Length: 131
Image 1 (cartoon, rainbow, N blue to C red):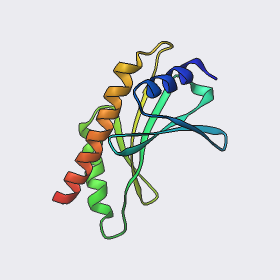
Image 2: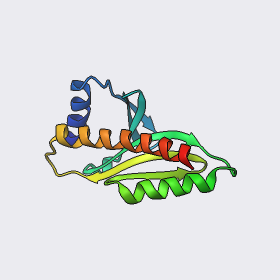
Image 3: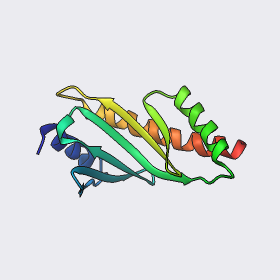
């Protein structure tokens, strides 16, 4: 197992997040819950210094609300650091991507990233209610 991946899973476990590793074709997915949301880390063995943490499928849109959803996603993407809100088919995902050095300080990186993702999810629903 890659050292960065091993250390990442150990950090999540130490924080009480109980990560579960699953194979998804050629990729590996690490799933865990934080603040009542399901998170996944899409792990790429060929690019171990690339970290992608996602909150999948927080909302499904249709033709009646697609424009409102896209406007909210665009605003969140513009105003937030590292967080991207995307429309995958008809599902909204909130994603954070970043590059790690070879000895990252997980307490600093993971905690801030998870909080940023939670905040973006909350912003999405708040802004969507306003539109």
